[in-house]
Length: 579
Ligand code: AGP
Image 1 (cartoon, rainbow, N blue to C red):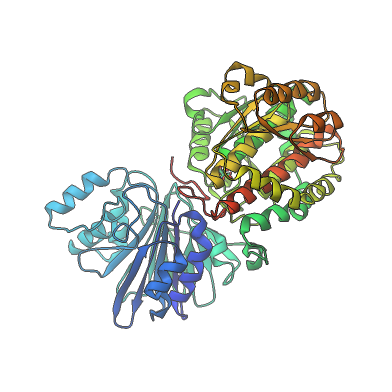
Image 2 (image 1 turned 135 degrees about the vertical axis):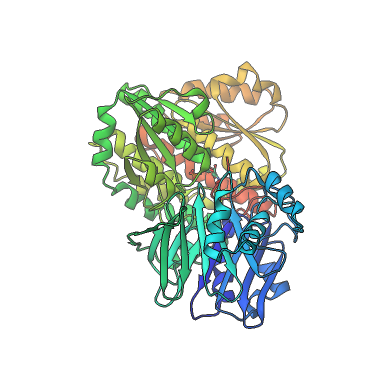
């Protein structure tokens, strides 16, 4: 939800900001803007569209100057247009700020500022901030004191960066929205995530909740929002910039699908012993997450119940505060690729307030979730750029399998993934049969249900085709009325204890004219299907790994066949930092 980058140092700020914005574009891509403190004064360029096209039209990188901030937007308040794009300035044009989050009391603050004569040019909640600082400065405060005083007036969430003409400083602060500080030699950076700064530094300080910082060429000072200086310890990460590059693939999504065969090794090598001991100490376990991570949570629940006989609850994070009653005897496992999802953070806040213990599974070192968790397991999937989660899902599964079955040998998993990747050409052809459809159904039973749900989510989010998943047995309780001539039904029917029930479901669908595409490893299922995707025969416990890859590839190729950029689906963002 919106990407922020700021730079102060000796290099051309506009170039560093432009490259950073391109990396951050996954966070929002409806409009973009840059402000640079140039030798002739503050210069602002912004417009509607993606980073490259707006920059080409407005020549972002032609701006001189060594201090600047930039923003790529995911609209919350106000449509995507030039006026609503960030940065926003005060009435004098000498103070500029960018914001990620939601300022809940902005209407009230805006009214107060209007009465004092401030003029606004956007519909956003964010624009008030530069004006608040202007107002505080008029009352005699220096920029930093005015910045802190303005932050105190905000209700809601924010990651904010601000600069004032001629100062060679960037002021930043955060509450419930991520912001990471990058430390360089004679230069300092701030960005919504580390990947935007990786080509310049590998030393970072994730800004803590309710903390502020002042960035200068000589270094960074950290403060509480009350203005008290605090000491922070930098961390060093060994991600390389090319880990976030496309590496010859047409899209990040395809690269990340292929990445799975390598990164799953890393995930399987993750030390989960402390987390494992924690899980075995608790009788009551809740798993909470959103989207794809929620499907991993469901896998945890299904596996735990089926194979270990241990019941646990998987609860969608945005619902968690309303329906879950954790207490001090509850272990809450939060799964989040980004570690920044606002709904998941809220669920954890609720759990923590009730005294529950928190275990987090995340991919991002130093992310917000790691700071509230009592124990953290890292997925080690490397940066995931495409909005559609792929490799982090298989990493989540790998880690979950290790957590639940510490004594099993899972060395077969990378080969299972590689075998499924061999299906690429076959799947590309199948995508052609689906690209013109309006509805697609996914069915499965047992362990295949969360995978069917993941297949449907992947397809709908990047192809805009309506897709739904059901346990096979549920078809006859309603959805079967939607199955008419030619409606595609993707049946996950591997050879396990569910196979004959699935065979029955496939026959039901075919009898109504439905077009069955099945994932199977048996002749019987293949024979009953219109199209059969043959999976290699593996231990049924590992079928999810074999099935999810073809579903990811299918979503990818349907998206591409429909002329959509799968990395940047409309209305979505990679890191969902609003509730
Ligand atoms: C998946 O393809 C999604 N784009 C989305 O559902 C995502 O999994 C969800 O927003 C949760 O994100 P997180 O794992 O970073 O918390």
